[in-house]
Image 1 (tube, helix red, strand yellow):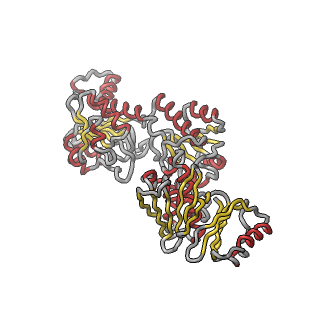
Image 2 (cartoon, helix red, strand yellow):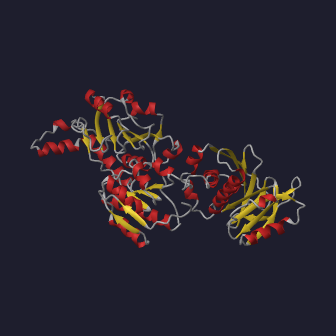
Image 3 (cartoon, one colour):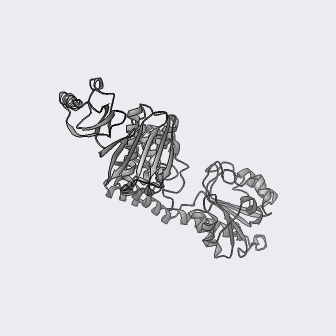
Amino acid sequence: MACTAALSRVLISDSLDPCCRQILQEAGIAVVEKPGLSKEQLLAEIKNCDGLIVRSATKVTADIINAAEKLQVIGRAGTGVDNVDVEAATRKGILVMNTPTGNSLSAAELTCGMIMSLARQIPQAAASMKEGKWDRKKFMGMELQGKTLGILGLGRIGREVATRMQSFGMKTIGYDPIITPEESAAFDVQQLPLEQIWPLCDFITVHTPLLPSTTGLLNDATFAQCRRGVQVINCARGGIVDEGALLRALQSGQCGGAALDVFTEEPPKDKALVNHPNVISCPHLGASTKEAQSRCGREIALQMVDLAQNKALVGIVNGQALSSAYAPHTKPWIALARALGTVLHALTQRVNGAVQMVTHGSTLQKAGSYLTPAVATGLLKESAQKNVNLVNSLLLAQEAGLKITTTHSDRAPAGEEGLLQLAAQGTPTMLVGSVQGIIPVLHELNGAVFKQRIPLTGNLLFYKSKASNASLLTTVIGLLGKAKVELLSYHHSSTLTGEEWSVLSLSSPLQSLQELKQHVTEAVQVTL
């Protein structure tokens, strides 16, 4: 995957709104819609697909990913990607995307409904009425006005919950390691350390992804720090609340009630929590609204169409550098970084060790995040890995023992928007390049300067020779003629220690450099 994905056939393996299929088909993409496939059926079906769209039912395991021969992108019509092996996809260079905003409102509204239901025991009272009872005293509730709601995770859903529950007069406090206190203050959530949050809350709701750092976020130790009778809501992911600890807190009265839409095991085989009288439970309904399903189906389809048509890339879970490859300004710089990496590998013939990248000029101040994967892509281009791209290059580089470090200088030479410098530690090899218009060009090679910049495209032959060897070019042209290879352009560098570099653009690569190497100090060729 470079900057486009040739999506000709997409498999939809879960039930999605018909608009998803329609949008893809209108863009000329063939759609195979087969929800409910067994693992064996999915393994067979995925072999011929460029794209896969799932909700939460399909488990996209490493086995599925490795069986996919053409797969370029996996789209999750929803927020989380718990059912996708993102590491396996990344390793294979497959892009994973989701729809981060598609079901935010539905999940937030369900959370608010859960809070109200806990406060007034609405589900329990309704069940009692259906049993023919009229037990007003049993279902004494509480007002939300003046109560404190702790929100753990202040992303899209967390902030939607905050603004809605503030309208009930609730005080909202919270915690998020990514959102700054200034940002959360803008939607009236006071951020506090977790140890300060526990004893202040009447209600606690979680809206974080399921990560090692968030698994068991509410546990025996944290429940012990909470107010007695605290109410807990989990409409995010099963496992964020330790289910065993929750049950113990409910049994002791430390937790007064819980509303659960998600479970560690779905459906849960252990019914102890579901059957507890102070627990309200739903079968993972956070995104189960017509509006959310339509929105998620529409968003993932449009994202795939934009990817296929080289328009934009949003909702990226892995390969964040790829999003920059779609910006008109950054695309040529990514091409330059990839080309310099390819040339550096050709000159050093190694992909391990340390490579130093230096960006020059204010325009490249924050470019390291997308140029580093591009350099790695070039360095690994000729490796045994067949599909090296911006999605998996950093992972594969790390495994190959390649370390790329980045520094930046705001200064750039007069007349240059920016410069990119690449050097292999422990060798004399150093390259400097820039972009002219939209064309990546080479300025310097090992300190030797090219007065005329060399376009880093096509088939290039590099050789170093004595500067006084005027007849060498005639010899080289003769070798090209014998090989029926056309010379398209010729550049030579300044003289350095009595030698100069020559760079030839050829119609096709030479099959062998053996005869040329009899006349020159060094010779390599690359195809860009």
